[in-house]
Length: 306
Image 1 (cartoon, rainbow, N blue to C red):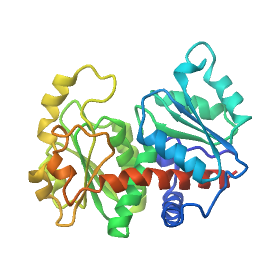
Image 2 (image 1 turned 90 degrees about the vertical axis):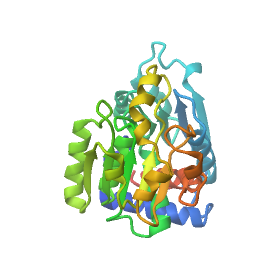
Image 3 (image 1 turned 180 degrees about the vertical axis):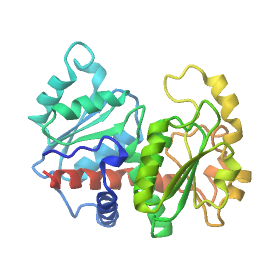
Image 4 (image 1 turned 60 degrees about the horizontal axis):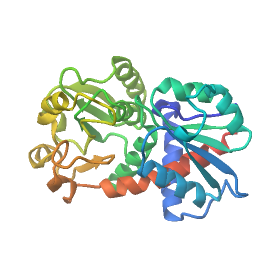
C-alpha cells in the first residue's frame, strides 16, 4: 500500500517524530542518504508560482541522488482535457514520487487515488503540510522538545497555514492558538480534528479573537500574508487584519525567549514589521532552509514505507 502525504494528519505523532528526527540527521550530513540514487526521478508539478518550494524540492531531490523533474503544468495537458487520474498513471510508471503545488485539495486527493507512487502536497488552498514540518524542525532546533510548547498564529485563520498549524501542531503535542477576526476563522471541521488529535498527544487547539491574549506567554509567534495569490478583496482583508500584525508590541506579550515564524514571502509592514522580521527573535531564514531538510526526510521516509 502506497503512503501519501496530503495533509498534516496523514502522519501519526510517532511518524511525524520519525520524519523530524530524520530531517535533523539529514541537515547534519546532507549527503549521507541517497534513496533516489540511480538517479530515480521525482515529478514536481507547479500550478502556482513558487520560489522556496521549487528550490527546496529541486535541490533536495538532487541531494538524495535523484533527478528533479520540475513541470509547470501550464505547459502540459493538465486542465486541458486529460484527467488527473490519467496524469497520475503516466507519471507513476516513470517516477519514484509525485509532488504537486496546486489549488483545491480535491485535486491532489484525486491524484493520490490513482497513483502507485507516493504523492506529496507541496501546497493547496487548504493545507501547507511540508511547511509545517520545516517549522516544527525549526522549533525543535531552538527549544529541543516540541511537545508542550505554545504556538500562536495570528492573522488569516481561514488559510492553509492556519489549518496546517492546527493539525501539525496538535500532532506534535503543541498548544496551538489561532487568533483571527470574524470572517477569517479556521474551518470548524479542521479545528475539531485538531482538538481530537491534541486530546491524544497532550496538546490543545483553540481559536481566539484577541491577538494579545493569544500571544500571551507563547513560545512561538507565527503569521502569513494577509492577501494571497488571486484574492481580489485586498482592501477589506487589510482593514480586518491590521490589528493582527506581528510587531514589537505583540512580541512583548510572548515569552521571553519566543521565536517568530513566517513561511515567506512576507509583506513587510503588513502582517509583520521589518523590525521583528529582521530582529533577534526571527528565525525565518532557518525556517526557509529547513524546507530542504524536512522535505528530504519526508521523501526518504515515504519511499521506505513501500
